[in-house]
Length: 111
Image (cartoon, rainbow, N blue to C red; front, side, top):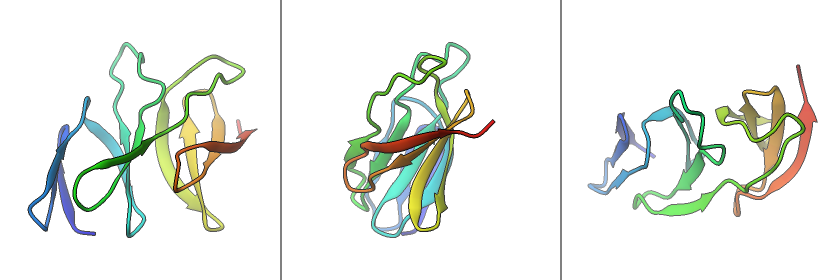
């Protein structure tokens, strides 16, 4: 998937675009899905700050709301671990995510 990110706007090479509620902090191209981690800003009031978009710029899912041991903190990164989609949050929690639904499968404290 070819795309360009400028702040809170993603422009896809096929002419589609998506405007998100906050600037993009990090992105991960999974082929059929683009995973974006939004910058929650200094308020950190957006703990469900990860979206999956398709090539038409439509939101396929938003990460599941989850209460972590240290409270609800925003995610800062998305990556693949042994073929699984993983997210990392500001409290040091790694969450493994169902790629098709955004549902949290399991979590691990990593720091």
